[in-house]
Amino acid sequence: MREKEVKHLISIEQLSIQEINNLIKVANDIITNPTKYSDKCNGKILATLFFEPSTRTRLSFESAMLRLGGKVLGFSEAASSSVSKGESLADTIQVVSLYSDIIAMRHPKEGAPLVACNNSNIPIINAGDGGHNHPTQTLTDLLTISREKKRLNNLVIGLCGDLKFGRTVHSLITAMSRYKNIKFILISPKELELPEYIKKEVLDKNNIEYIETHDILEYMSQLDILYMTRVQKERFFNEADYIRLKDYYILDKDKLKTAKEDLCIMHPLPRVNEISTSVDNDPRAKYFLQAKYGVFIRMALILKLLEVK
Ligand code: NCD
Image (tube, rainbow, N blue to C red; front, side, top):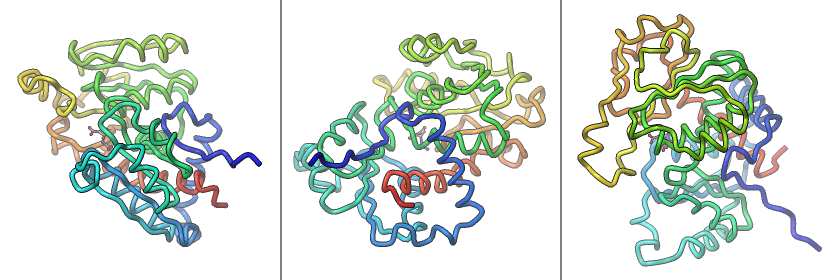
């Protein structure tokens, strides 16, 4: 008899719009009725394997599983695992999949989660692979947009900062390109422009309108969403380039003068300098709320991948 197919989440394209909408629906229900879900994962174990630093993603996964009544184990840096002794990723995954029911992993190498899937008979969730993908941040972003804007269609979305290395940007563009009447304003310095393969294979292929600019003010008045990002220091080869580019954009109250009253300001966090703290009390600042929503959508995702009714 053929073994049952195991479901993984490596990139956001693996989910249909209907599946995304269902996850959002479940997350909204969890927000309204949290106690209904508090023992759905009794007896289940989530392993969080983080080969790269994280605060929100790892802790929100752990919080999600604990709020579902499950348990968690794992490591938060490669140095505290047997990887530091030279163990291969394939072996680590094979063993951890004997100790748990679902794995969330983050790795600096693009494609590492695919290697993990091939060595696991339990679901693998990609919690960020290098500068490539970050599908659960995108689910968090989609939940935030749908709750704050009450729609996922008809939006002008400004993405600002490190569009080259920012994996959250890559996954978000891929997801939003499937919704109707979306226009992107890509705001970055020349050196940190969106990679060609995303422009060609995602934007052009889907006939999505986009404009590239290095000026954060130029299209401010048109934006429904402004998604700020951190310059990804850890992906730079050259410290001098990082220092030159790191404070290229600093969003402050002054720059928001022409912005819409219902603009939604987002950021996957951590913030370094890209948004002045003086913006935090502006009602349009949604980045901490966004971090909170991350727990509920991850709860919905764990339920889906573990096939809990
Ligand atoms: C992002 C990441 O790890 O890609 N953080 C997160 O998961 N919330 C963004 C970043 O680190 O800049």
